[in-house]
Length: 143
Image (tube, rainbow, N blue to C red):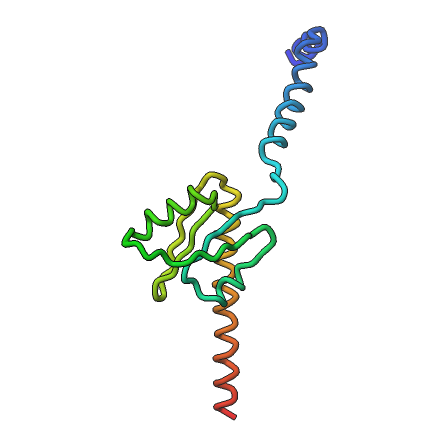
C-alpha cells in the first residue's frame, strides 16, 4: 500500500511541488508578518510628573514632551484625549499625588508597548534606588 502511494506521489508533479512550495510560501509570509518593524519612536506628553521618573523613563526612541497644566475645568481624561489628537502623541502621562494616569492613543501597539515598558522599568529603577539608599542608611545607623 505504501509503495503504491509513493509511486502515485512521484508521478504527480503538482503534488510534489505543492509539498515544497506551500511551506516555503507560508514561512515567507510569517516572516513578513512577524518581523520587527525596526526602530520605534513614541512621543509621550507628561504633565506634573516627578522629574526623577521622567529622567528614568528616557530610553531610545522615547520623546518626552512636558505639557503645562491646563487652567480650564476639563477633566483629565478629555484633556488627555484632546492633547493626543491635537499633537499626535502616542501617550499622555499625568501624576496626582502618588497616582500615575496613563492614556494611550493605541494607534500603534509597538509605541504603546514602548511607553508601558519604559514606565515600568523606570519605576523599578527608582524603587531599586530607594531600597539601596534605605539599606545604606540602615547600615550607617547600625554601625
